[in-house]
Amino acid sequence: MSVSFNPSGLLSGSGIDVSTVVSQLISQQSAPLQIMQQQQTDLQNQSDALTSINQDLTDLAAAVSALADPSGGLSALGATSSDSSILTATAQTSATPGIHTVVVNNLATTSSYYTDAIPDGSALSAGSFTLTVGTNAPVTFNVSANSTLNDLASSINAADAGITASVINDANGSRLSLVSNNSGAPGDLTVTNDTTGLGFTKGTAGTNASLTVDGVPISSATNTVTGVLSGVTVSLLSANPNEPVQLSVGSDTQQATQAINNFVTAYNKVIGDINQQFTVNPATKTEGILGSDSSLRSLQSSLLTDVTFASTGNTGIVNLASLGINMNDDGTLTVDNTQMESALASNPSAVQSFFQNASLSGFANAFNNDLNNLTDPTQGILSLDLNQNASEQQDLSNHISDFQAQLAVQQTQLINQYSEVNALLEAYPLTLESITAQLGALSGGATNTSSSAEPTGSSSGSGA
Image (cartoon, one colour):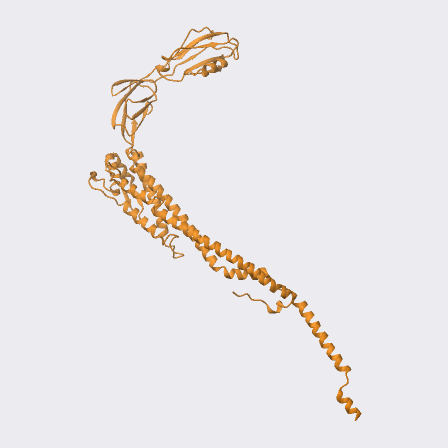
């Protein structure tokens, strides 16, 4: 520890800058602190990088889990219509692949009634009418004298009788509109015993949809037909008795392709991020912040091993390459979509069997098991790394706190010490002046005494 001073200025009475002197001394003692703080920064950067890669690994685990899911995208079925203006359809995994012929004779309709037009806001006369919905019990509605159509509509809606009442206004006046909440025959409306004078007219009868499926006549109260073909929902959009529509139920290659591409994207993200840590920067000649992390290299090796999985038989779909998924020199994967879509179209069951099977020995089954271990929140390979990193950061933080406390004590001691020195230096000119004066006084007194005394020798001599 050394601080230089200008000797010529120390005795001038200006003293020293205690704050600057102490800061210089403390700064010289802070080198270990700066090293620890840099170590702490490095640990935090490592933690951030590990957290990011661990999240990528979690995303990969989710993508592989989807490939291993028996009800996931690989087993998804789709339904296509030869004329989507007449009908469309969706299929669940419980559906049976096949081709069906559907003829839509007529759509299901929703029953409605309306009244004669009356002047807007006119008061109604007392009366009543009976409304029946399908085979439900009849409901009687009473109309109070001097009430309005809006009042009547509100009372009908409040009754929750399976219909929706509203008031429609046009150039002719106001009408009460009644629409069934259900389509088809079960929702057909009937108005009887009308004594209101409103004049109810049936607008539309509630009729069932009529269609044939493979020649079998089908009646449906709605235009969404379920249960006719197991696991298939058919949506009727228009009727054309003269056009048979071909409905094909089979593997949904689009969902399967998406599931596989999701896996490839997630895998490449993990491998790419790991590769970045091990790539030497040509400018700094150093690797990434995790370049020396052995756990990361172990993870890289494990993932590269997992994607080289191979089986036998299975009509030639035995590894990723047989699906058009090839490994690049850096370990990432590239998909030949033409080859993959061809395999899915020609042999979807073999593709699914490669990824997952009843014996849980498929590619996705094995990879999924490995990823479950790798991403375990306590024992996962990166979780252990992160836990160790957090422990090291905490220890280092404690050391930094202790060291800073020691520096604070030392700084206080130095401030006190140099403040005393500064006080002495500032008082030096006055002290010197006082001492000089005292010395001058002492020196002047001695001279006067000597000149007034008569020497002994001279007296003797003159007397001789």
